[in-house]
Every structure is written in structure tokens, then in C-alpha cells.
Image (tube, rainbow, N blue to C red):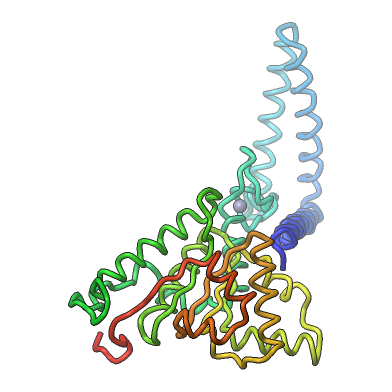
Length: 328
Ligand SMILES: [Zn+2]
């Protein structure tokens, strides 16, 4: 689903919710009026009187006497109404529509013109649902990231310790989330994590996903294997939901995990190229994670893909000892 489609869908849902609340209120009110017809009559009188009061107010000082008479009449009506309601064990509240969100009355927009908190939440919920990530992110986010798991001893053939390296990566990734909407200085708007398994690449990708989802961005997570299978199916077996396919190019961030685990053939190469290229043209951002070294990437993928990766992706190297086998 494209972002604009999603927003239209959310707006339609608000209208439906409001309509439902109003219909329910009407049913409830009619039932109450049926049992106490006087209430309906009083409500009608209150409405008419309200109009007269407004008119008197507009007319200004000369109407002062009329106004106070109308107002005392109004108070009497309201008291009578309250008594009747009390006898039924009800309150004024019971005659009003019950909205899911009382702050915006299910409009999604506040009187100030700003979006309501319930609207923001709805955006986030939908983005989560689409990401394929809903479950994992409670455990894997920047807050739960433990730098102390990484060794602070120098690592063979590297200038820094794994911990120092992770510190830089963490900063880079937090910056990526924080400056996601910034359009300046984006000669390398995408990230490419490389390094052996078990060094925190997926964890870090999940941290970024959560950071962006919580800002209402649309993030899609796919392993390269899943993605290629999906595209293959779409091409050769049955058409997939066009919105899903479109979203692969248009979502704010696509996380392509485990690049290199998919089968390599000309189909894969052309699909990957198209994806990388379309996302570049759309101005949407991508995070690729792979166990392959840059050299291995060059051997495996054709020049069109590699030239784009090297031009538009910030290569970030993960190194250290496999964390999966260390006691936590
Ligand atoms: Zn609201």
C-alpha cells in the first residue's frame, strides 16, 4: 500500500467510525424518547430556545430583558430534562455519541488543525503491521542495545576494537534515523551492512526499523531470499497484490536482509537491479545487510548493481566474535 493510499484509507475509517457512533447515538436516543416522550419535546424546545438566545445575543443590549427571560426559561428546561434523565438512571452523556477518541471525536484532526494522537498511533500501527517486524522489535531496539557485549580488545587486522567499531556504527545508525527526513548531504542515502553472521547486523537493522516505525514511516523487512521468491511467484506463477509489489519500491525504508542467500541467476540479477534502481529514482531509502565482503559482492552481482551499491550505499563493516555463542 502506498502512503497516500494508506492515509486515504485511514480517513475513510474515521468517517465510518463517526457515522457508526452517530447512528448508535440516534438509536439509543430514539429508544429513550420512546419511553419518555416528554424528553424529546424538551430537547426540541431547548434547541429552539437556543436559537432565540443566539438571536437575542446578536441583537445586543436592547434585548437584555428578553435575553434574561430566555435564559431562565432555558435553565428550567435543562433542569426538567436532567430530572427526567435521572429518573431513568441516565445522564446527559447517554444522549451524546460515544466516540472511540473523545479528543478529536473520531475526526483524526483536532480543532487546531493538527493531527490527533490517535491518528499518529493509527499510522504507526499500520506501518508496523506491514513491516513483517511487529514481534521482534520489542526486544531489538536502540534502548536494548548492549555495547558491553562487544570486546574492547584490539581485533586482528582492524584499527579499532569491535566495541569501538560498534560505537561508531550505533552513532551512524541513530543519525540515520534522526536525520531520515533531511534532504541535504545525501550522496550516500542508503546503508549496506557487511560482515560475518552473529555480529549484530540484523539487530542493528531492527533498531533502525523500530526508530522509523515509531516516527510513522513505512518500513518493509524482507530477506533477499523471501523477496526473490515473492518476485518469482509474481512473475511466473500468480500475480501478487499489486500494492505489495509497489510498496517494495515506494516504502520509506526497505530492509533487505541476508543479501547473497538467494539463488543467483539472471532473473535475480535483473530483479535486484530494478529494485535498487527504482528505489534510487523514487528517492526512497534502503538498508542492505549481507555476509558477503565487497569483493564477493562484485564477483556475484553484475556491474549495474555493484556500481549503484558503491555509489549510493554507505558500506559499514561489522567485525568481532560471533555474539550468538557468548553468555548474556
Ligand atoms: Zn483522536
